[in-house]
Image (cartoon, rainbow, N blue to C red):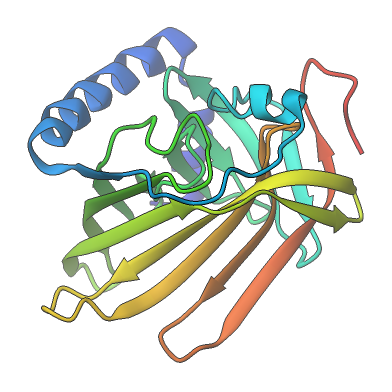
Length: 234
């Protein structure tokens, strides 16, 4: 897709986007019922979490168009549209992608591809240490030479014990969500790890890190943010 597609996406009437999101949601719901599986909770010590933070972690974030989050690696993500369980984001390079409101789940559509995520949009919520989920992703990428690459991925995510994170945007109580991409072999070797430190106070992650199969880790921390319709901004 070219940049003109982004302009077209941004001009879609909200009602039209709701219909599109509903269609995608119905498809995912039908597939999820047959293919997604939850591993339930494990017997971990009950963490001490402030009551306010625990209450905020009981529901998925509600993103509003105009909200944005800037990180120390120069990246910046802004909400362009939000309807139902879906959110369209635009980054600092004007590239767009559609995701669930659930920040732990992989993206659904982007400029050169799409994916079906066989997991419930509410997976892992309400957040609680020990919550786990395992799911498949059917991914399709369109290469520049016109070739289409299709791939099936296996993911497993777990909510870890709450942790305090200090960033340039402030101090936050967070729930670390660690997601592992596993190989499709019997050994299920870990291919990639993504960890989101989700802060219920602002409804987004304040630190994100990814480690590839070679053990190389990259990360980013929040430095500024703006929540549309709220006085809470840094």
